[in-house]
Figure (tube, rainbow, N blue to C red):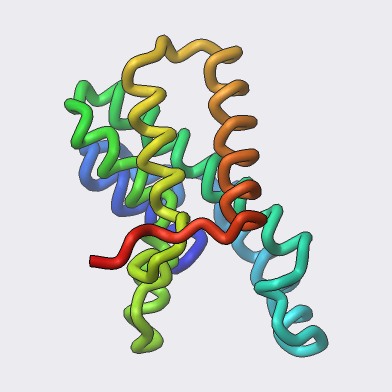
Length: 158
């Protein structure tokens, strides 16, 4: 659910053929990730604070935010639709996972996680979708998330 949930929801909302079900590559990637994560779960404890985990999670967050934004822009959505697809692609699978295991979804805590996805969507909505733009936004998103982790950014509590 974590790996494919957000993309499936995105494709349904954007009225697209669900990529995960029409291409074998996502399934193979998920199978590989399941094998690797099973190893970490059995032999390593507390991988959430591992630098490799943080970097790979950051890259995934930014990549999925960008892909969700692109789908929203190509579907002709307004800025709110682009933000929604960016968010649901980036955090939808993890949200479904947390709900299924009866935990509060991760993005609902005060961390600066979903905010990165929102910022990426807003930037991409106003810029042309060129490879250089996407690369710059990707690097910016990764650096922003890593900086937020390093400086322990939190959203204000009301």
